[in-house]
Length: 412
Image (cartoon, rainbow, N blue to C red; front, side):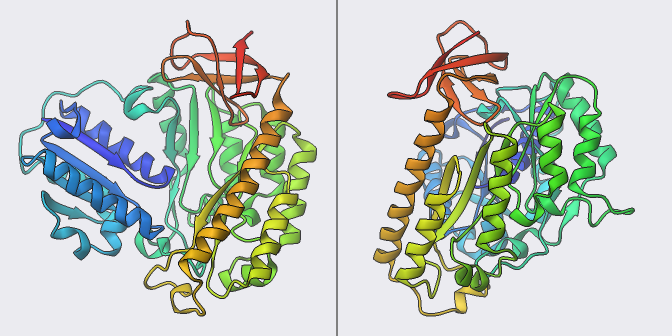
C-alpha cells in the first residue's frame, strides 16, 4: 500500500502524524505523492477559519487528481465539524482526535493484512530532522477565543517512565534533537498519580544518557516557572528557545480573552529570560481584531509588542469559532480592520526578528544540519545557510557571518 499524510496546524498534530506514519511503515506501507497514494490521511487544524478552508481545499484537490485515493480525515476540524467534511469527494472516513491512536489499525485492518515490520522512523521522514515528541495532550483552560479544549478533551500526560522510554527509542533511531510538545504543555503531570510537573519532567530528561537535546514547545506565560528557566540556563541539554504566547498587549483585552496574567507579568518574564540568557530566542503569538478591541487598544498592543525583547511574532487575525465565549462577544471588528491591524503587527514582528538576527551576527552557536545539510538550525532557533558538504542531522557549531540578505555562516 502507498500512503500520503498531510498535516495542518500545531506540533502536537505533527507528532500525531509521525505516530501514524510509523504505524503505516510497520505494516510495510510506502510513502508516495498524494496523486499516487492508495491512502491519504489529512490531519486537520481548526484554530482559524483559514485552517478549515485550507483542509477543504486540499481534500478537493487530492480527490480531483487521484480519484481512486481513499481519504481519511482526522484532527481538530474533523472532531469539531465532521459534517462539513463528510460530503467532500473521496472522503471514506472521519476520525476524531480520540480515535487517532488506533486510526491506522482501524482503517488498514479493513483493507489488507499486516505486512512485515519496517524499520523505525528515522530523521528526515516527513521532512523533519528533529522529532516532535508529544508528552501531553488536551487542555482544561478556557481561553475565550480557543476551541481546542472541546476538540482535544481534558489534559492528559504521559508518565515520565513512558517519555524516557520514548527518548531512548528515538535516540537509537538516530535523532539528535527532540521537541517536547503538548496542547497545554505547562500543565504536564498535574493529572498523574502522584502529581508531577513540567520541571520534574525536565529534570528526568536532563538525567538521560546520551547527547540528545530537547527543545521545549509552546508554554503559556504563567507556566514558564523560574525552575524551567533555570533548567534551560544550567543544564546544557535544553535549547535556549522559549515560545510564550502573549495574545494581546493590553490588560483589558487580556481579561476579555480570559488570559490569567497581565502585560506587566509578561514583560517581567521575558525580561528575566533575556537577562539570564542573552542569546535566547523568545517568540510569541498575538491575536489582532479580538471582539470589542478598540483602535486605542490595538495600538497599545502594538506598542507593547514593539517594546519587548522578542525574537519573532506569530500574528493571528481573529476568527470566530463556534462554541467559544468570544463567538458571542460584540462588537465584532470589521474584517478589513482586522487585516490592517494584523499587517501592522506583522511589520513590528519583522522589525523585532531583524533586530534579533542582527544581534547574533558574529556569534558562534551550536546547531543541527537540516534538509540537504546546507542549513543549520541553531539552538536559539535561527536558520543559517552554510556551504554544502555536510549531511542532514549533523551536530555542528556555526559562526554567523552575516544577516544580509539572509543569515549565512560557516561551520567551525
